[in-house]
Length: 318
Image (cartoon, rainbow, N blue to C red; front, side, top):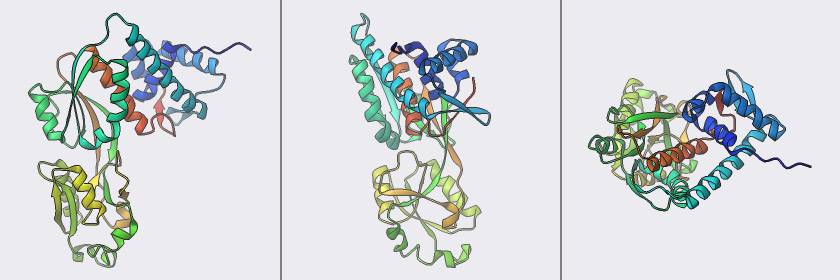
């Protein structure tokens, strides 16, 4: 029986299309026509001997076989890139200055930095973990090459902003239901009319924090009283206070620690909150090859974390 030898170039098209959420965008990124990309996908399905994508509404989703192949494709491409970098006569050098928010760093950095360092050991990385306002300020004065941050309405004109995903904000409470049920400020709230409820204690980052305005505005519009119960410059301290039942916080579900959880706004009698977009910011000046490589790994890591590698994630048709 003849062995199947997958074409790495075709696998790269496949993984790029899934990572970008569009094979049309993948064609543009890879410098190919959409018809060439479609031909590569047909070749890949022929080699696999089974459908890798299926129609869902106006787009495509990965089949179970597609999810399996995607995981192997990423590993094969990583090994290929590491091997190419190891034997290349001109390995990547230099410095990449990366900024990202604290919760994103804890979730994404271990895997991304490991993959990057193995492939490009001669590149030095400087990481700044800070809030979105500080990252924007550092970009404005040329102190960062890349940044991964949530757009909560701040001015991003100082960078080339690529919007990756859109995530709803959630009310965040302690992971243990008993902790919330036993909190004095929570007991009996549902039996009262909104205006007669005691002020909702809020656990938020200290100013400047765009979420403070978003949260308090939503509560004011709903006619719900509130109070600041705890604030800190540390995200870890904020999560500790939330887990202890001092009040509710607000965040997306991306990278939440195990001791807190999203709450249903309707079930808790709280207003629905808007969404935020996760942005990959690039410096205005053209980036070097090392910075672009790290940017690609960050994009892959975000989409893998959010389940864009399958599990029902829709990929627009090429």
